View 1 (cartoon, rainbow, N blue to C red):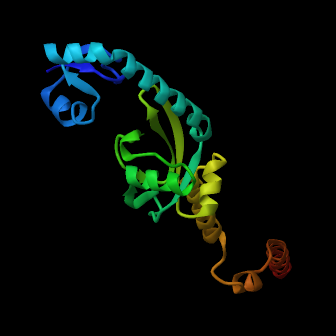
View 2: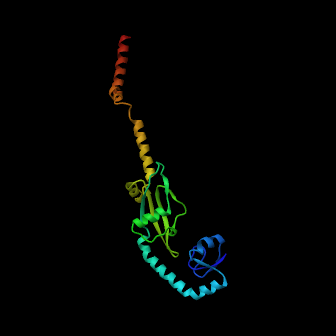
View 3: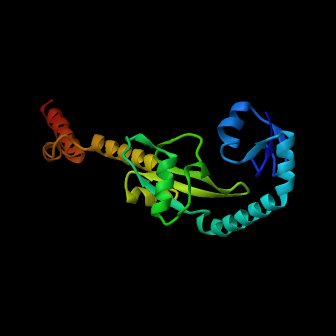
Length: 210
């Protein structure tokens, strides 16, 4: 389907561009969200008649978005979730979770359609997520998914929590393997020096008897 863009669409074009897109994309997204018009003669005339206002409105929205961007770009939100020892979440983190967490952190006016998350987050760690405040203004928000506030702080400092936990478990396993079965082993055991002295004495006695 041939359409006229009413705003910049990534990988398609800018305001006023006439482009061809798949029918489903146009009908299900672009047209109902007022991001484009069908490229027929009537709409071409309508667009040209209102082009100045459309561009002015877009510039105003872009300026507002740029003003908000500095307070959002680089922000990090923490989401506490249950997870296995391998770091896999019991569930997942969705766009909705991110929007709600941003709102709780004082970032209002972020809708689900503004958060670009290709797939739900299903493991612990830090994930950078893009938030589109305007078609021409995109910021990045860090999503810190952890099992506790302490682990979230460790991840914020660049520590791989799962790797650290694995190393700790390995160290404990080695320490346990090196421990004697009981304290009696040391108490009952004869020191090597005493064993050597006993062997020398026994050899001397055998020589005298001979």
